[in-house]
Image (cartoon, rainbow over all chains, first blue to last red; front, side):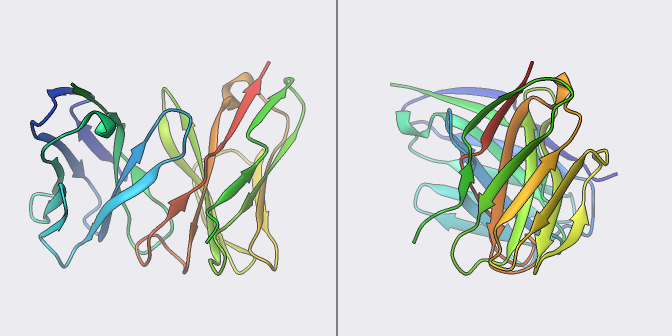
Length: 111
Length: 115
C-alpha cells in the first residue's frame, strides 16, 4: 500500500551546519510532496513543498529535491539555527486530500 | 487572515463515551481533512470533506465519523471511545479539493485523552 519512509529519525547538528532529511515514497502516482515542521504543542506548519514536474525548489535556507525515478525526495536546511530545532515530517499525495506522512525526524540544533 | 481553528484544545473523556471535535478552516477554504497523530502510528489520515461531502476516507473504524457544514466548518465524532483513541487530532484546510492541488494548512489540534 501507500507508504512513506523517512530517515533519519533523529538528527543532531551544530549551529551553522547543514541538515538533510530523506524520504522515499511507494505510490508512483504521488505528485505532491510537502514538508512540515512541528514544534512542541503546535500543529504541523508547512515550510516548503514540491510538485512532480519540478526537480528542485529553494526558499532561503531551505531546499527540497525530488527524484521521481528513484521515488526519493529530500529536505536540505543550510546554516541551521537553534530555532530550526523541531520535528520535521515529509508527506506525499496524489490528487486527493490524503497526505501520507513519514514517521518524522527530530532535529536538534546545538548552539 | 485567521488560521485554522480547532476547539477544544484539550479533552479528557472516559472509555465508552463519545466526543465531538470542531474545526473552522481558513476563510475561503472549502476542503477540510482530519488526521490522527500518535507517537506509535504517526500522522494518519482520517477523512476529507469538500462542499459538505466526504470525498476520501482513511482506514479507521466506523466509530470515527465526520461532517461538514455549508460554511465549511467541520466536526468529527468518535463514538464508544477506547483507550487507544487517545491522540492529537489535527484538522487541515485547503482552498480546493485534494492536497495534491493546493497546500494544506493545519490547526493546533485537539488533544484527546481517554481514561
